[in-house]
Image (tube, rainbow, N blue to C red; front, side):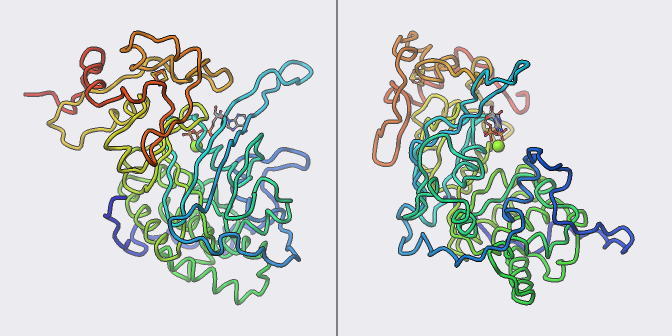
Length: 422
Ligand SMILES: Nc1ncnc2c1ncn2[C@@H]1O[C@H](COP(=O)(O)OP(=O)(O)OP(=O)(O)O)[C@@H](O)[C@H]1O
Ligand code: SF4
Ligand SMILES: [Mg+2]
């Protein structure tokens, strides 16, 4: 991981808007806004309410720490053969007419203390994978082990008790905070759901969490609309942190923020990881952000991981033609340098009907360069280990090289100069 993290200046992103008068102050409510009985809650409602589980206060004892005894560098999370298929209903009788193969057989491990990142184009299944790991959506197949616990087999009451250990920060700092709740309730409701009913103790935990993310303790009575995007995302992080988790899924935590605020929030997350002994599953489509924060990276394409390596190795020596194409799209910071880009043919195929054999074969530049070998269409490649810790899902991964990609780009791709040469 790049060692550039600096301690963020607390609360620098912006000043909160003036507090509302009592007349405009929205009334805190407990029900999910906009959801009628019997209706399926929206994703936004799920995001807002996921910690609370209907507001029940559990009577059970907290779950024994499943991460107990796992030391830095050992696997904290093990995902095996994980699938999430969504049925698509249609016709007058609302029968299932198709299946979205959103996550389709994924294996990886996250070591304690690491930032493991998932990267890939929009729709490749990153969010679904992150949510399935937490069982925010139910898996179709496969297992997720958190320490010694098989998360996929837990009953809902056990799962609720595990939630303090496995948290999530959502992409949208606007949609994921209930606009009708003050910050104290937004952060505090997860604590209530974990059985912390003592008001004073809860307020202390809320204040500590706010301070940890660089916000003032006395912001607790304010509402989400009084904060900027960066501050709202800090509140989202504080909500996760207040529960003292071991593991956090960060789903595009900075992509909705201004570029100027992004690095502050990224540095904050990296600092918190050290300070609170956290392990992250970090999701982003931005390869520069991924390079900055990650220890290990999984590259996703159509619901599968096609390359898995340490961040350093992946950026230095990518072994899947798709990864090379993604990397070639990173803009060069030097505007005087002309930049050749591997342009992939066509759009990402639909996850309803993924191509046979290697899912990437319809867009693969290497296959074209190798004279369209039949094997790419007739047989699905395995995610093979090419060297310790580096895997790629390509029959011809040994032939992937920067030189080959440059040769192909020179013949087929457009030159994308940031400025026209004088
Ligand atoms: N509840 C659902 N029902 C049906 N299909 C779904 C559902 N949720 C996601 N999908 C589909 O699953 C696929 C993967 O979606 P997902 O949101 O996980 O992708 P992503 O990689 O996170 O994309 P983005 O970068 O745009 O956030 C997409 O084709 C999406 O339309
Ligand atoms: S198996 Fe064939 S189509 Fe798939 S990535 Fe490798 S070369 Fe390309
Ligand atoms: Mg997503």
